[in-house]
Image (cartoon, rainbow, N blue to C red; front, side):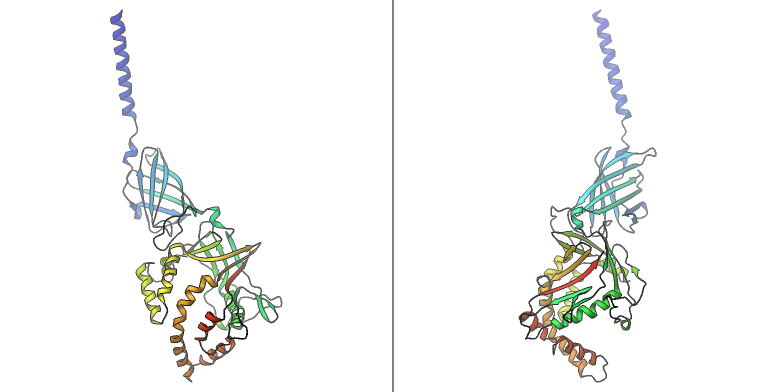
Length: 405
């Protein structure tokens, strides 16, 4: 009897062993064949918000049969590389579907970004397919986090109404405040009033509306073929400025991006995309920026004062203040924000004045009369007067664009 029990025990152990071996043999290890090399070119169909990217690459790092990390290079504008953890799911044809989500706390940037803040800017969603022979497709969807939208998402039309108070422009699409500490001394209050009127007349012919997309893109309806002789039509009986044309062009996505943080609007232009749109090849690099600054220095611009601010802008975007009041939007800069630029540009005024005097001394130059009239309307005799006014007789400075929904 004991012998029979022993044989039975051996039989059970043997069957268990065979079952285990059979289970091991049946384990699907196909996921180990998923390529982990970088996939690009014709082997990678990469989309961002339903738009196919002409460049970029994808690389997958596989952890196990159901988990991996996808690295995307030069797919999301403003980010050289992003990583998204994904779940894997094998398909009947042997390929693998993948899907995952992630968030980005660094802003889109033209240059290397600084240490990432905790504030989430983008929420990302990724899905796609990869085959064992190295073919991949991926659809990346980016959406600004709700906190990064700051009540700005949507289309804002340029305000066209001009109102006046006591002979001065009180509200306009383009509105400049340059008030004086002492009204009896040379100042640019009258010049600001002229900017508000004539600048707004020009602006309504160039810009129709701006859209802050939920995907982080800024697009606009604009017009580039403007005849300067047609823009001075003035306002109608209701105080509205009407453009001289009815046609508008749509700017493409990918030229500029945006996000809101701490009550500020940050605009990030894609320099390479803008240059490509203009028919010029180029990239936003430190060397390119240095070359531009060197040219400005020739004209007397203090680039040492200007450079730190520009470098910061190329990392985080151009900061603008904004205020949403019902259906009205005001986007503006104030004195503190423009001071680094004004102080950098002031040293160039003497050289510009020399060039201006050459024009004024030329009896055959048709622009001389207009320049003299402009200086008289501004209330200054020479360009260098602007430095004295800025440093000694400027109380408030505020330049705004005004929109409505």
